[in-house]
Image (cartoon, rainbow, N blue to C red; front, side, top):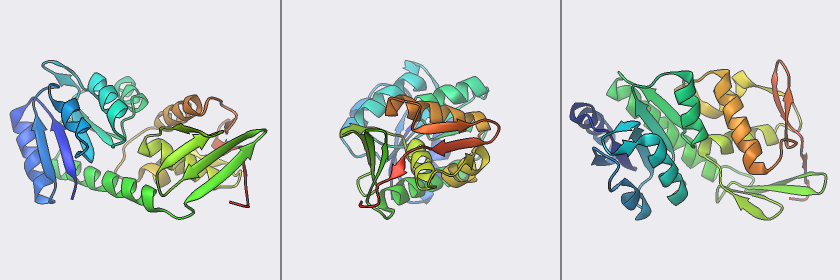
Length: 232
């Protein structure tokens, strides 16, 4: 089972969530503030982090930035903030899911289970190394090590970004709708609008260094523009 960091200053919410997650066999490291979280992640024992946004000595958004600089682990924001702008900011910072208070501990446990499963499957899926070419540029996806490189330069992707990019790439230039990307890449436990996909695509384009890899098909969705290298 997973080792999970749970950062929540409300003791009742934290203890209830931790108790339910422990029933699933997870080890829960509880924090009521930002202090000490980054050092814990740096030790390399954490598989997933659940972060409240409003904390007594900081906020979850800044903490998420620190964590993503240290480790490639999935993040869930746990917060009373429910506006679309807050959700989009969370995804821009690398969050994989967003749970709005009040919530049931069972729902949180299901989201954790789905995210851990998705993350694990992404690392194990077939076709270990695949490459695509666009003009003189080469993009490689290594599923076994969960790594992406463009022209030999390794780039970091969140789990959601990885799933979306690979799903688009293996469609061989077909147009994929936002609804399909939401369903196939983020699964039914995920509650998000089509703008969520747009945000992930924007993040992907920024990391790839160009918008040409992923084309926008207005009124429908997106298409990957690279051509598969069949020799890989």
